[in-house]
Length: 202
Ligand code: GRF
Image (cartoon, rainbow, N blue to C red):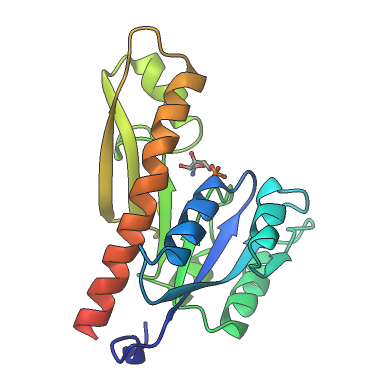
């Protein structure tokens, strides 16, 4: 991230979504309320044209863009996303329910500047349906993790985690809802911490 962030320039955040967008909204609300200080959500990009999160972002006056995969190679799709983020001078990319792996080229272009939130205490239960995996394994505590994205699946350096106790009667739905409530608090805290660190070290 560029050193003028240290001089007080607003950090420009780009968010990638594929669906509901509740974490995206949690980040947008935290920026609005200055729980993520000195930042703005410069663009929300979805790979899914009918992602519910698009309308929620637009309602809040946030610019949205659909970049569908359209049968292209991952690298070609990601190149278009990187160009759109580049055009907006994005400092930090936040994945919020973005359901695709990113190409090595994209990760190299934004290394150390891509964050993801995952609904388990990584390294336990990476990949899809993390809440179901936790219930099926029988762990008594799960939670959520914010981590940097690298070329691995959900195994980049961990930034922050929050535990959630599993109840005897939990279903995938009930556990997912309790974890999601924690995600909405943890992700803004982690983004704020990362931006503070960058501004301090720059
Ligand atoms: C969240 O559970 C997040 O941890 C996972 O995908 C889900 C996205 O939900 N990566 P939303 O679109 O943010 O509501």
